[in-house]
Image (cartoon, rainbow, N blue to C red; front, side, top):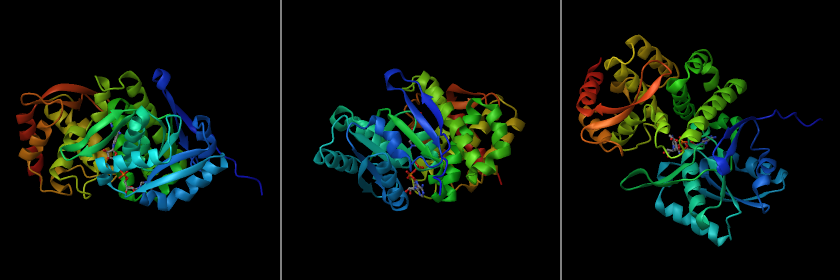
Length: 377
Ligand code: NAD
Ligand code: GLY
């Protein structure tokens, strides 16, 4: 029997001078990982960090894929879940790398969702002041967002992502086949970040998602590859302009100021995933934009309906973890790094696909708005 024909992956370049890298998107990239990673590996052994769920489902495929390109993998498997992004496991990972003689030329592979990607990236940045790392994201959220752009972090008892570094990977392999085992709820949560790119500045993508969103969620191979590629291209373009979030990168936070407040008010419990909070957060940002007269309510509701059509909750009063209260939500927004004197920057919209940084949203007005949203029947 002939070997199956492997389709060419889509390539998206993140242009960052000497730190530029490719994101490859397509089917069966994990099976080809050895060949794809080999150009970066000075030794045949690569280090892998993963979580127990991902490793149980896909570890063997990764090891086989590496060996087909002449590489062997040495893995460290951590517990799945947000609580893994902590100091203790970061230290344990660094000790593990040192124990096995890792050096700056070695490659550390992040094999998992955003939790593993963020922890691995930070470990790689610290290891002998920086070893190479490759992202192999296995959740939709990680493929369209967290594996790209170089934000790495662990959580502290003082809050989420407070200890981290900007540190770029050498390569990102977004294998769309690996998403087949992802629970539907995790797919929806990742889809919220896909919609985000349309709402930021791409009305054509909004129209495309209106027609093809269901196919994306069902992982139709052409549609999922297209959606991941458009998303990565959008993020790569923004990161190339503003790697360290001095300006335009803040647009990627559309829906996140409201979303982070919801996650914080809910105590980061698993009944509200990050992407789910962002979905509601984007609906709130659109409605708040309409309230300020920046866009029409009709356009805002059209955007909300796109979010809703994917199965994400857009109504604050029905969101898991509730009932939420406007006061504590605004208190959480006050903790935003950029909040000053009762004002906070928000990403709002002048129309669908026309988001912008609104520098000084008045938190007492935001509180009135949230109160009204919560009182809706
Ligand atoms: P995650 O890594 O916890 O993955 C979600 C769940 O899916 C986990 O239980 C995991 O084991 C499981 N899983 C992963 N891949 C799977 C697969 N293919 N099949 C079955 N199960 C699978 O969460 P996430 O949503 O990927 O990422 C969230 C994290 O990303 C948060 O910590 C957030 O702070 C971070 N984040 C970082 C950035 C960034 O720019 N660095 C951006 C957004 C989010
Ligand atoms: N997830 C937001 C960013 O990467 O800037």
